[in-house]
Length: 292
Image 1 (tube, rainbow, N blue to C red):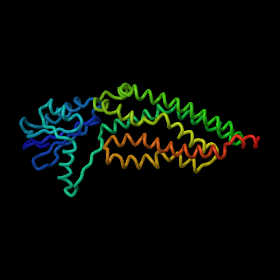
Image 2 (cartoon, rainbow, N blue to C red):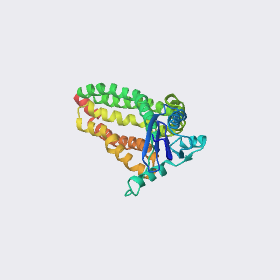
Image 3 (cartoon, rainbow, N blue to C red):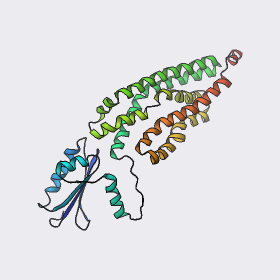
């Protein structure tokens, strides 16, 4: 780093990392740091400032500006300027890419952390429902092959009943204990504040997803590969991806979280239609008696 001349210090304090840049009056980057916060952003900022200040002379820093989720707090503590993150981004883009007219920010590092926590919860919380689905597959397939339509109908109803019950328990647990669950993963105040509400949105349709899972599994069990594939893809491919690309443009970050239950509801409605149609046309009790 240069030992003379005016120095300008910029620090982006996020929940995941502290990003620091030191520039001269010509806007040349003299030094840059990427420091993981490890859940302690204040400690990370202190470490970076210690390294930077040890390399420059007293009074050399003309201005110090901070941005990011924890930037305002740190700026107040050290007496520096705070700049809103979207304003900081717009100024940098204006300088580097003057042809750009519009900048949109959705979420940030904190949102990535929020999604990571929710992703883990989706994996573990839905294991019981997925377990019922896997247990349903061989039972439905065996009885369908044997022509026992009444048993197939009973297995469908039983699987949906138990999977929905487990889904309802998961739903209740998330709604009531979301704050406690988040504290298991992190003590970052921003993430702890934002995750519970996002998690409630993501799990909002949990009680009804059993119908979608059992319905698509039924077509797999009876050997109808195409309907099984399309119904399995319906949630992620046909509904969730378009929703997550469209809704954030109108509702911001909340649009991402709302996309989850909307995709669940829409895919469940589609699956319910085809499953009900299959039951009415192919699983009539009369047909079961005739085969027997």
